[in-house]
Image 1 (tube, one colour):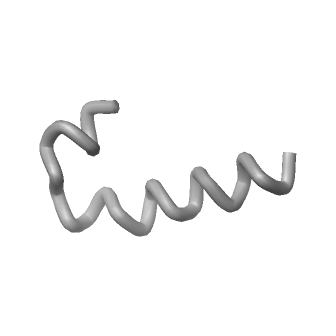
Image 2: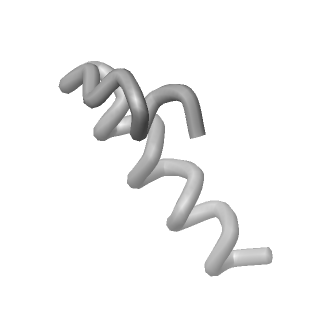
Length: 25
């Protein structure tokens, strides 16, 4: 998504959190 395109380091923790939440769901 946008964060992946921008490649901002601050988006990495948010991306990891999204993956973890996605796995829980």
